[in-house]
Length: 446
Image 1 (cartoon, one colour):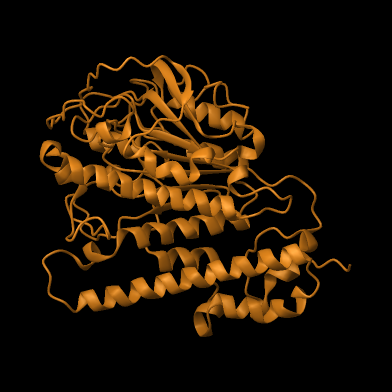
Image 2: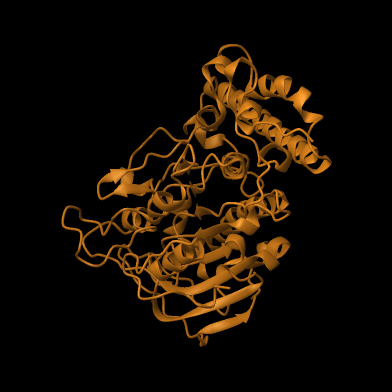
């Protein structure tokens, strides 16, 4: 078969450039797929009795303004256990064989700074205590950027930062609303508008001027499709179907924004945008960027820390709700908060399943070659504790991580930075230590 130049194939009509999934018949490559890293950050912690095994009957905690650890009389031996069943973790059942629950990990909290701001901005950093003298936060270059320095240099976007905070009423500082940082005091700004993300990833001046990108590239690709193998033709079709779906989702949200802007309502129009659709759309854009090699490192912040403006959680509540306000009244809203935790977990399951459905050139899946971590910087939203954080890890990183369906409970005092160091090693990065790490998690490594 005559081999097609990947550069020419990507170029498209009119000089437009679009990335595609890696196709064997286009690239002729036989090397292993690239390893990727993705983070799914959930704000304001979780309701422990709904998430953590053995805590279902624990006393519902009262709100505290400072960092305070919940003491629960549950004796769990460090090591590997069968995957547990709790109201929130049960939402993982569709992908349970692909995920590993990790409990018992702690963060360092530096006194004198806001609990929410520090838990979000330092989730991927956690510098050694008192080593950062230019900031009130123990915030250094975050893990995603350190990984991007090593595996992202060959991609158009070394890292990709996404956020699902659509609100314009920025009442809090940037420390509440960003988990990705170039370094101390230097935020890596998140993209929040799906249309802008789409244009940044896939857009060109020619496309924006007279037609959408899918039509433009498909027009040029039809003549080339005959030269693809059957498998690549299927992959090609699936990819463009997913891009079409993304476009339709964006159009739907844009129409809704236009309608809401004409209605007099107390909350900002953004409050009424369906959260599930918004999160899944941003997640789909992230997955497309990872799939096509536009980036190998991405972060998705599901929502901001300590933001009182309400959001609409379709299928969960009848009216917009503020996650933060409810977390301060866990005794009153405990059932609703568990529903919200389940909602966030459902979106994670959707994205895990999407990654697992995308086949790479060697027959593996995108998830097989990715480390995709769900996590929060708080172990509980009412007490603001930095201990025993909720962490779920999916993906195999090309086989360097063990398979899922397991629960790993860490030894007492295990720092979260040990998870990041373990993931760096799994990605092939020779890193002796990271932040306040003390070692790796051998139970995760293959």
